[in-house]
Length: 139
Image (cartoon, rainbow, N blue to C red; front, side, top):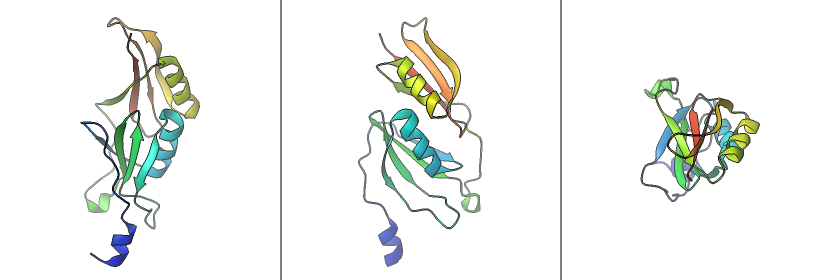
């Protein structure tokens, strides 16, 4: 490994949670900024941007767990695809406040806060990158 690559590598970051989500997004640095505003995410480590402004890795801590994101790299077999078939659920103390914060940060409301049949308060949004997020407030 060259000295340059060794210097560009971020320091090891603590991985939180027993299941870590890794998202490929079109604009990982912009997503990290949005996730800080919308969900209180903290950037723990990241690789610097390449000449196109993309990064191969950003490590965030969100709501007590790790979330890792990167840009798409079609030239390396990671083609751009739309987010589909999943949602990321945040267990929160105040569903309404979490929903309002995400919407104010630029997320699209898809389900306003409501008391659900399973006894919890629940809401959902979609971020500008197409990722579905939900908020669940246990009783």
